[in-house]
Length: 495
Image (cartoon, rainbow, N blue to C red):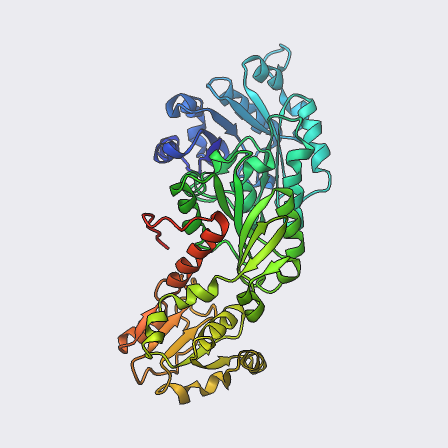
């Protein structure tokens, strides 16, 4: 199930929020702590009006909410709302004391037993545990303890490494006897668990319009881009690893492509700090292949059983697939980069090139150009790196501050660094470089589509190529490696 968490201050606005997302969700979490005080008196009517199974949640500040009331007062208000409405679930923190659930009456009658009242009315209790900073060591026992009491355990914790993410995915097997449970990894490392919530063993995943919890995605993204609710035991998992990685547009290529050819697969971003730990995760959840972006294009090499000629020559890998019990590494950056300029090279319009940067992408670019007999000069802020790459690719090198000497001679300028990428749109690593003669200017940055560099080059009469062109072309080649099929030509990809 995909559950929308409301983030509005009024019930009317919350209902409009539900209506906007109704095509993408299965249930709703009404966040009472976010509502204005005077809205609480009418909150019991919300489930009937939204006509979806609803969780009532009155979250305190320590668990990521807004309520500063004592547990006793908060539970009293929660009881008044829930028992008058048609809520399907109520969320109560696992450490709320039993005494705070024995709610005092104004007369001398026995206290209300809130828990018992909920069960008599058929409202399921979610007992939630939150850790906004880390992954505690007692997660398995904590979830089991909650389940033994007949409640639904909700574990919402914050992984800080890919090893923590492995622990969360292990909960599916470790807690397989608990049929109803909610497992959530918060923050950037936890995004993959929100998308692959079924692989974690969770009965639902939360979505919101305003990322009310760290790492939360929109319901539309979960439903349409990832088809997260359709993942099953036969779904093939693919992904992209990097650090950072959540800015990636690669899911916009692969997931629509999988859908178009009716291939039961999903492509997910994984924030990875240690490559070795990711390979353990890949075995645990049977990942079938993945893209590799900075800074891991060289780090994956020791774990590959087979590599292509391009990977061996470039010394970097951007695509890994599982074949015959081993991992195979390829490099689609090489051909993806060449795609929009091959004709110009074959016509002799590009005979010399200036490459800015000396990282993994620059390495692929340099070899692609050198193998097509283009004279290459490499410039980088750290001259020693430029010198090393130049020696490995039989190229020239130059100090970044001296590239003006080439501004009237090169046919192609390739910018391979992250300078100019959103949110730093106003940066231009070549701001002192003038385009004296019309040439080809190729910026591998794809967000924004047209960087400050490309805009300036275009104004000077140059032919410009943005990074989304290379991203799409190399992505289509990755798609073929993953599926064995050509990327469907009828799918329009908007990057």
